[in-house]
Length: 605
Image (cartoon, rainbow, N blue to C red; front, side, top):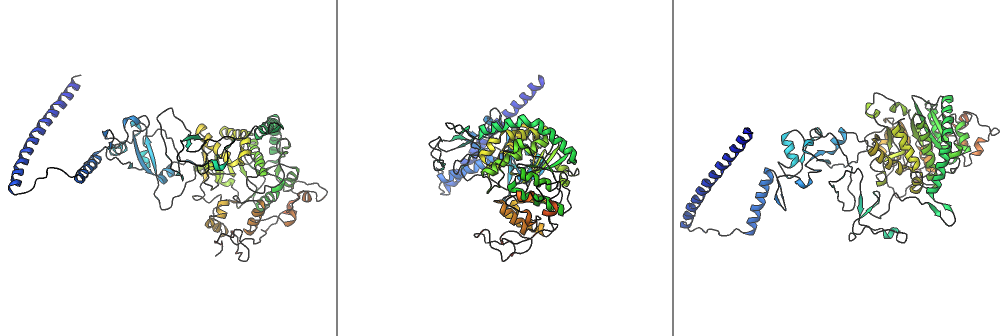
């Protein structure tokens, strides 16, 4: 209307006045320059007619610096005055830097924090719309490049002020030149990974052929493919091991297991419900769940015996054995026991010789089912491996309502400590975690059950579970928490025993807040037993340590009653012995050998 006309008319008049003023100012400057030139000539001074290349470069550089200071930057199209051009406005109109640790401290994303000692780390925030920019005028100008072509720094609260939603991406520098690409397109919450690797087929599948080659074009690979050797950490299982001979592969074998599960799940849940009610196992709607075979039976005995020696209640413990021998042992130790013969009776009874061997991988099926069963009955689950000793009841921590920081998480894990890509970003330890009884967690373990063939193929229940945590956290909003191994000391494990000796010394000296010690990161059962002994955390009498478990449970005519093995197997005091001077021990073991001859460091100095 008239108001707009007056505004534009006023602007035009001012522009014209500026042009006239510039003309007269320029004319006066030229006249003055001529006058000065004549004076210079009369003084026999040389007037330069050309500017040297170096001088011109300095002038151009100074001009650019001044323009950048005033707001804007140069690109091939000239001066833009923006941090991001309009061609990127669909996903980036501005950016700010914030201190990384402040961001992770303000928003608990559930992941452990990667430490960079002595290095200031920052996080990059991209704004996808002008409405998401900070309200403060100066900070908004800084975010869009109005004050500098460099990305400005801000506090987390100011930078996030107008962010109504947040998409978080975790990234870590690799050993290879890597680029992060953001494309304005249909939104995706997944990473598409591309590497300069050769194509693989049945005849070119050897590691020597999977070498990163800078001369090759980029090609699409799985996101857990390792750049150094091209190995896909999620190689899929085969249908057939040998089709001609009719030998089924992991996938078809898993179909058979799923069939057995589906045919029997109603019966199992009914029997389990009756057992939990009869034994009064459920406490605060929570059950402590373990699974064991005969090969790991001594470790189960040590967990029960050590808890009893400290006066800790094991009445809410439920053991899922995978063979008749470990079933009778668990009964003899006085804990509630359920033997799912149809689903778990087919699993091997021997001990795993090393992490990831076929016996280890097969036992992972039991670790999935035992949690799933109890969760489907509507109870929270504290799952743990048998290679754990309690210093105090960990349920006190998870049931502490005053600890509001953890109450909103659906599933909470001990930190494994491994930084392998297949475990990132959570690095959750699948040998100790707390699961809430809700549909998000129930579907997580149903999905894990469906991935059983991948578990056997990868020989790791942990890596499949962690990647499902990634997917379910993103897709369904599953709230995952991993207790950082450096920031917390409640749930130490093998990482601490083998590498973080300050934490172990605090445990020995009684200065720790630890609820337990998990002897993970240890190659086999033999070493776990020896490490527990020299830590003063072994409570099983020698007569109950047998390669043949049947020798133990047939004592007294073969009948094992509830708790009948406690007096025979459990020591009231820890049984200590030295074995390795380069591993933590409750007292010095200077006369013991090293387990690692190449390690110069000793626990006791």
